[in-house]
Length: 361
Image (cartoon, rainbow, N blue to C red; front, top):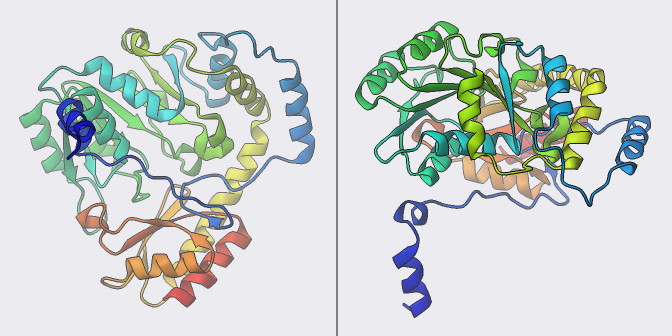
């Protein structure tokens, strides 16, 4: 081992060395169905209007540090309760990081469920928190309520995340179970509604009731992934403390202006979302018609499916060889053995995926 290697081992935190960096595969030239993106672009006329708005920006000046116009647009577009404050992040990831930094004290716990969104664990560990993941029920990925309540009692988590719908499984947890968890949690509970555009269920109007309940959302899944904008809704006193960990000018001027513009044309995004929900139903039906495939119900813009024992890697590679990129989840968690996840794309992309899948099987 060289001197440089020894120095890295000496000074980098063991918890960080034990992690693996977040991997993003190269999707050039492929049908990209791995990242839960909206497959639609904007109509040309709307793109022209957006270009005119951008033309008037002054990039030599810092953006509005509070992004007040954008916050107002979000309040109007999503009927955010007036009693609640709104805090913006550079995607949901930054908000998760801010939450963890705000509450992190050596020995404190961040609790969630597994399989779930990997960034809860990673960002909690980065902040110095202990991570506890409670395993979902194997048969349908539902909450194991007794196990969650036991974990809450044992670990007294400072921060608890519940994704609604859950990623990567796509299902909605029982609202009653979630209510019981929220009432039992001693610390802050964050309901992550990243996939809110694809379901009718939400806790947004409940943010702050009870006082320890926050709701987090993103604009990425509804078609603005390139802008990297997330928002957190909850009581002003909670968000005032979390805001202290926000880096200055974290929402750049291009994102502020572009997101506000998009929300003024929300009907375009809503039509796209409706089309994705329609395609999701078709894709789920087609997947369930394939021998050797078990597709799980979804309230998100992706579908989790399982193939024959030990075949997930071969199927993934077979899809890739045929120009289709999905997410291989086999090996990520024991409950995801033999599983892959496909994003709902355009009708022609879904058809290409199904054709490739039939061949790969």
